[in-house]
Image (cartoon, rainbow, N blue to C red; front, side, top):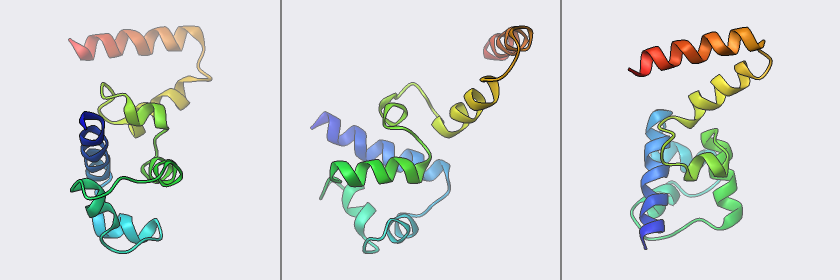
Length: 103
């Protein structure tokens, strides 16, 4: 049951970060207007296929969805995408800046 609670709360958290209502998300995913509300209230859980669509809709991978330490997976993913082609010097500078900001 703890995992179900995590899924409900994580969907809500990620949905709110994108500023999307349960109603809008439900319709965008092709379901009735109460689909997401039923999940977040504990009345239902998505199938595996639907879970993957929810992740895609929220802009996260399933791994990012279940990593509770990532507060905003979409932004973390964007930073990762930007950093993939950086030089070693630029990556080192970015790491130094992130460590300075974290303090």
